[in-house]
Image (cartoon, rainbow, N blue to C red; front, top):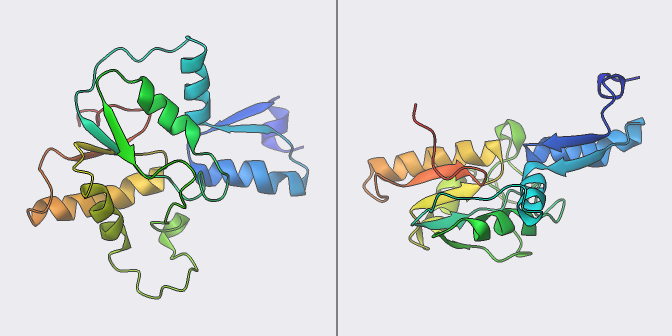
Length: 179
């Protein structure tokens, strides 16, 4: 028995799309069969049930970036958008549900195998796409994407190409917590 089974876990909530994908799609091949949900699925369900209600208005434009292992690999597009739609005052933008998301970098910062050999600046390309929507905040649902987008946004701020107030946050957050 593995540690998850020994703990009596039936449902696993994964905050990272890579873990979500691995536990949901690869563990069953090794005998680990669990209900696996991404944290955006849990939050969207709680909001839908009225058990979680976003109260604090966010008067800004939020652009959402689909993580590859959540969207492209597992077709989870709607829950993050459902969460954002329920936040009072905000305006959501970004790629449409089901639109093929483009990968920043794979876990471990390895380039994806999509024919590109030039990986320098791919995160800057995604931020350029986000900046085209004139966001106040860029949101995603992946810790790797948070780092990659955050690095590119910092560089854009340093070069004067992005507002100093631009932030990147997880879709479960409204603003990055104070340091």
